[in-house]
Length: 238
Image: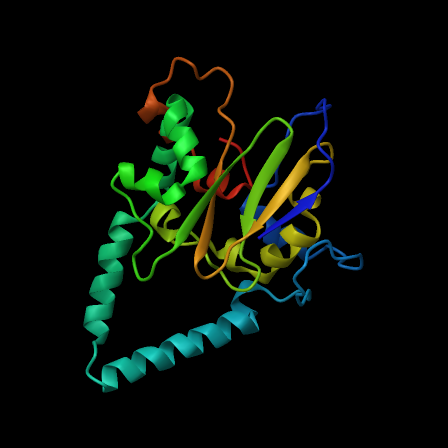
């Protein structure tokens, strides 16, 4: 789901200066939330921090209850679950997403495929999103006039296989509410359209940042080394 803020600007008057995701939590504590909502979800917007988030606490309780039920039924064990998670996480990380973007920067045909069918494109690099259940990947590209940022307003849906475990700030209520209500404050930008993409349980998003100037002489591996997890979420630049 997409929410769009602002009109496309034909000419940019200042450089793009996003706020790093790690700063969002601290800035949230001194922010006033009294203004209209610009998104078609409804949320609570108090100053609850990540470790106090009722939704996350409830989700944790449900997961623990499910695991306990599976163990009592003999379907699995704590050791088997741990082994499965460790095996998956050993292969998941932001280097996977960085490889995708670096390939897209250097191969126009691959970029076309990545934007048209994210799942097919990542399969070409030996990656997949079906670690527990089928998940559709939608890839969105930044342009000089449009910046993209991803969020999950309901919980913390996130492309684990491509970015590794979600950072704490991404799962916090501060980020989930603030990036939707006032993306320009989060991204420090006022003259460019911003698309906010809301993830769901079966849909994940990935941002392709614009290739930095002065990198024409870098190869794919060197480009990938410049691409961070935060840039793939849309809260920083490579």
